[in-house]
Length: 237
Image 1 (spheres, rainbow, N blue to C red):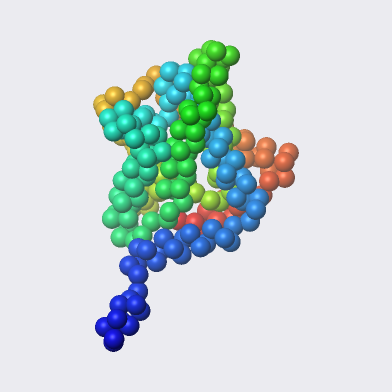
Image 2 (image 1 turned 60 degrees about the vertical axis):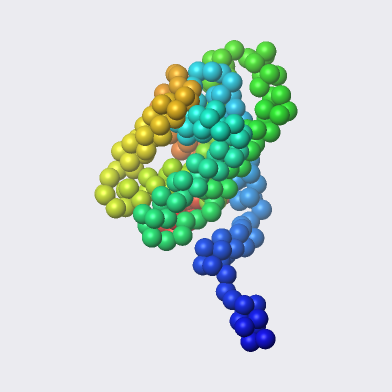
């Protein structure tokens, strides 16, 4: 009887407790935060879909995810989760602490939404109405604006940026230097595995970053959106 009581009272693994705590913390986010986040992830998945069907190349992370999907044939959602787990494990081992789960949710949800747009036939619908350069331009605008929304929501961060921030902290590198090295490493791995590459990949690297801040300013001034990301930047991760 005593052994059974001990088993019943056994505490869950610290990792399970950590995940549970993080999931429960989602309840504390405000409605406008969650709305900005969900809109951001939805728009980003649409932008990524435009990149993919333009066949002019896509962002470095999707180059890797698409290459893995070509090999495993499991869908963008599952392959996004695999990449997320790899980077989260890397971050956890490097920092010797459990990682936040929001990057995993963001990357996986984006992949699942891309699968949804494919299932709904969005690619076929857009291809007959827009040429490849219009699709590329739409993808750039959607990804830049959605990145601004996700940052302002204060929920989630791109999975690769967790590792980038650790490089900045541990090696005193600039954010730009660390991010470029990670982006090039991710793209190179995906390209060698058969992922797509083109002018869209270069455009993503050169255009998205400079557009994010203007879009954040526009959201704050024109739409009176609150920047929760700015308030939590020092303590979020």
